[in-house]
Image 1 (cartoon, rainbow, N blue to C red):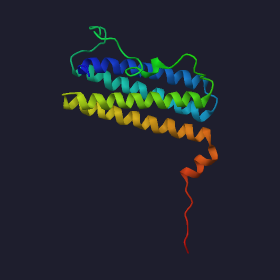
Image 2 (cartoon, rainbow, N blue to C red):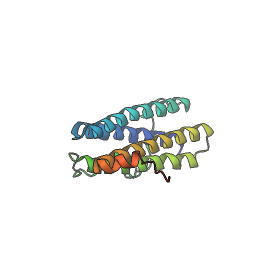
Image 3 (cartoon, one colour):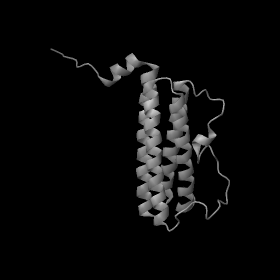
Image 4 (cartoon, rainbow, N blue to C red):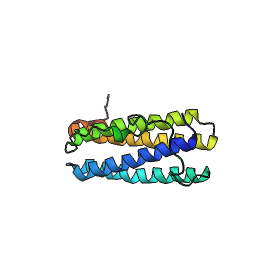
Length: 166
């Protein structure tokens, strides 16, 4: 992985892409539950950007424009929402949520790799925290997907009946 500065730059780009994707999905969502999920995720992306911006300041690099990346980015790995095909039907909540699952998994894995590869204990803690947040997002999107795909089955999964053997 790159220096922490470069990782943070890529992470901020990823969070910006996520914010845009989630806002777009919220605007086009058909089901209220999907819209609420997307709006929640978009708000969280702003929080992630603030965490990352604070780390830039800690590194003594308060902005993103003072150095260009020397290496081309693999958008599907680094900024996953940029890799979302234009032909995805964003008017279909389940299709948008499926893409959201992929985005959250990739972003979680990106932060987990960054945590494993950094030499800074402070950055490792930050990356682990962000990976855990992205994992929480994954679970939220998955729960929303399962609910919309099968509301009756989802309800059963959430409240399992108590079996009485007596």
